[in-house]
Image (cartoon, rainbow, N blue to C red; front, side, top):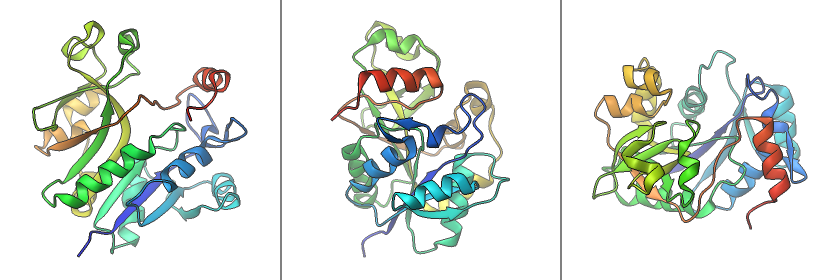
Amino acid sequence: MSSRVLAVIPARYGAQRFPGKPLAVLWGKPMLQHVWERARAASGLDELVIATDDERIANAARSFGAEVEMTSADCASGTDRVAEVARRRPAADIVFNLQGDEPELETDAVTGLARAMRADPGLRMGTVAHHEPDFATFRSENVVKVVVDDRDFALYFSRADLAGATRGGPALRHAGVYAFRRDLLLEFASWPPGKLELAERLEQLRAVERGVRIFVVRGARPFSGVDTPEQMAALEARGPVI
């Protein structure tokens, strides 16, 4: 029997660096709508839901046709919000966490990750990374790097210049796309943050510290999230990737 895949886009209104970010207009649409449209175009997702605790986001999402789940305002992270939706939908075997601030989300990479998770029941968690041709980009601590073994499992994630990233080393640029087996997601949401997670400010290290192997699907092109109004302005000026 084929595994059922639920994809959740968590979205909150009150980001400290960019309040109202999901509804900020980019290329004529709310940023959240770009994410939803790109995710909707992916193959292998049986359900696609936007999860939020804010009626402004919920109303906007419904206006462009998205299914919405209202979640608790007490969720400490997007993963907690995704887990709350997953608990309500027990038929989902695989659950995706798609970041609501990735307006250039690569549809083919999401399709590839869904295919990999379905093909190998032994994969408990997966994510996406890609080659970054601009070595200068890697100098920023806002750009997360990952190194993988010869079977494409993550060895480590870091904000630092990992594996000589700025000198053309073997590091890849990590993208905020995650897939979990249902049982692992619910376990993950119950675990306290680990030492590496707190040191690097990277939630996926919570799994790495506990011995979870994270499979990395390589995307075809770089894409990145939006953390600040300045980054949004730069994207607006550059125009969308077709």
